[in-house]
Image (cartoon, rainbow, N blue to C red):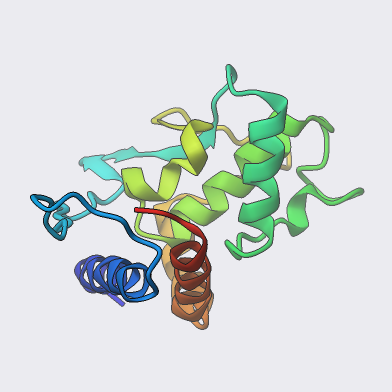
Length: 173
């Protein structure tokens, strides 16, 4: 799917989320409030210049707790390829939360449009133009990610829909 299609689907899901909560009786609004209309600009590709590529890495100032939660999400529901940060794999060393989270965040980012939205992780990640690869640990870039992004997207929309429905049912807007 193209990035623009993902944005449209996301906007529709957000409106659906609002309606689920509103119809479920969990929403209490002031009389003057209105249904929010989410508006997003299209995500920018990770090629910001002729030869400029970006990566998504964990923010060094993020708390351990937030990084652990974001890493768990990325490697679980987020569907990031975290096999390279498993014991004995190319990116396992250094065995630090920051290093493992950086690899997982970048995997997710490269497969999901290379946009600011795909590199947030609750504020624990940041975009860089410096290749974080080291030794035999090679981080995905836009070139390598484009080859596998179609396979990665299979089932991804279903996961997002499940998450949004759960959030809708448990969140007050």
